[in-house]
Image (cartoon, rainbow, N blue to C red; front, side, top):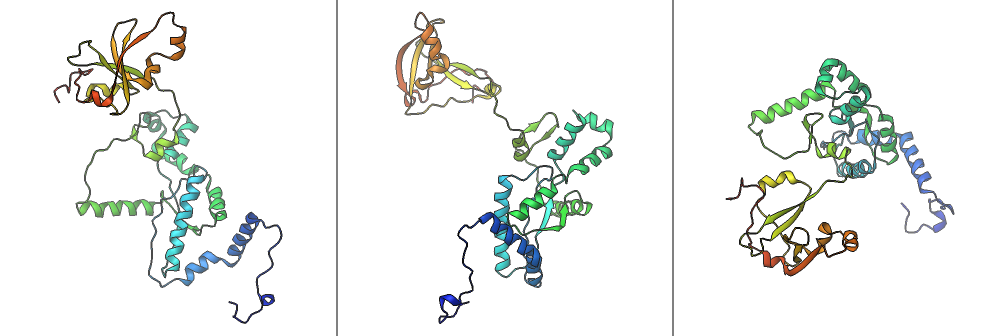
Length: 318
């Protein structure tokens, strides 16, 4: 700390170079931390303080770290540093998630396994050994990336979820919760893998997320007591939900058109902005005669409380 009487020339700060490289400076700081064993020394000096425990969701080492890991890791590091600097002993052990479909998926691809029967034919013990052999595949890349981003965490005293001691501790905790009557059976809609015959977590489901072209259909729902026997048109990519359909929704301020189809003579009601769904502009332009006739326009508010005949009768009375 400089005294009030200190002269500028007495300052201990070095003159910054004309060209400053932040990446190089970060590497120099990381090297200095390693030289003085800064992280472990800070933990040693905080021994005896109140313990502050941080439960970190460990990553899979079967894949490389990405932006999401780096962002979350930075936040976790800040929280742990804050706890340390506010008078706590914060032991930060790195962990590795060795369970779950990401590991099994890799082995299934490697060995050409298609079903549960293939696993049983191979032997569960041999299958597990194959999984254990790859769970730490990218651990060195993880250590390098996490260290480079400046996160303080102990990789030398790490834990793996496949360790028997870890698994038994989890079962012990669950047993305590169960015996206290805090475990109950619930129901939740989950993504499901027909190949693995198991529900998927959101993380697992998103690993194979793809943009695909979904087949879609337009369904006509005949309006009750309509003079033209008009049908409300609804577009859907999930026709399997139609047996339980209970309502049609319209926007009160949007414009809906009543049109007569030139080929079938049917009267249809649909959103004006979605006419192209039934009558593509290219097809309309090439047609020798009009494909439809607009009979009138209404707002969604005008359609409120209209009743219709559902596609299936199972819930018609509800």
